[in-house]
Length: 432
Image (cartoon, rainbow, N blue to C red; front, side, top):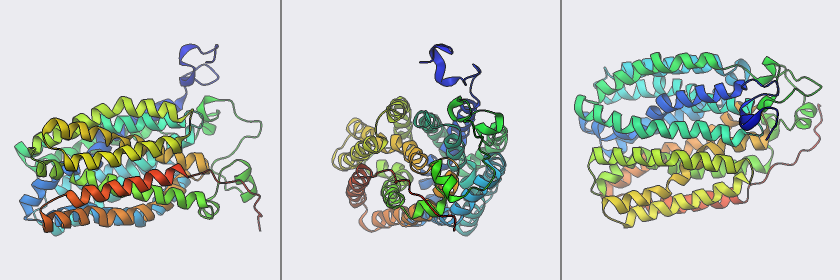
């Protein structure tokens, strides 16, 4: 603890003022608690009503999400490069506005084709820069020492928002229809979310301080200026080209793919899975919301621990618990046994923010968005096939048993991969 700044030293810069990075964390938390939770966790609430309204199979209802992931895989590297080049503020503002307009347009669709076009080319395009990628990039830029805690605060807010937004969204969908719910989601994106982009600044150096509020090093670094390979590695800021030549990048990519294919598939199908287990649709939404609420303090605790202990080892244990959760959900019956089994799946929720903190740990601050963007095509390939494949299995077998058992083995694979992940060694590079 810093005696000069008192009990809340980590919230203040060395000048004694509250470090602006924490305002960025607050703006990121707000953006993802309301907008991000609806975009990424709310789709499961729309799943069955859209399928029933448009006469779709489970595989068809999962197709918009899968194609959106394909679109994100293509645009991810471009979005990352744009964020690194122009900063978070303009990309987040434009992205959230575009997402809001997309939901308003979605409310007027009456055909599956129109639904696909709007969801993929308007909503998903805006969300790819408006939410988690932009927020995690900015947090990574502003924090090093407290990176895990800052990322976890954003992740916890995302889950806290889901705890309230998913059940609330379900009530609106069931009472007024999914089109009405989509319209008001769009209005909320434009009115409540987009203005929060104004809080973001490019870097701590741009306001005369260093990461975590510490004093700048004697040599001030211009984060807008391109840097040579030698300068990059000296600062432990890897360029994207350097990063992809390391085994650490590909080990991280493998672990991220295994985690995200399970996480994405289960959360798209979570309500249908719980309905298959005998719960009502509203009860299923309430259980998912309660799980999100319980996850908030757990995410914060593990975020704090991850700044002091090995993030990789913590994530390995968390993903193993998530895999065990899927086996238990498959084999137990009754509301409370199922809900208690779901609690272990919080492991993948906790590990989500830590996963992106690892990108900064391994490769630095300067090219974070681009390097994360280069991961996007890799993990989004899996997310194209995962949700649709799960829907196809349900359509053919009238059961989610194969999906849950396969999810267990994939999460064990993710756990093993992160256990062996190591930081890349800094080597001298030639400018030639």
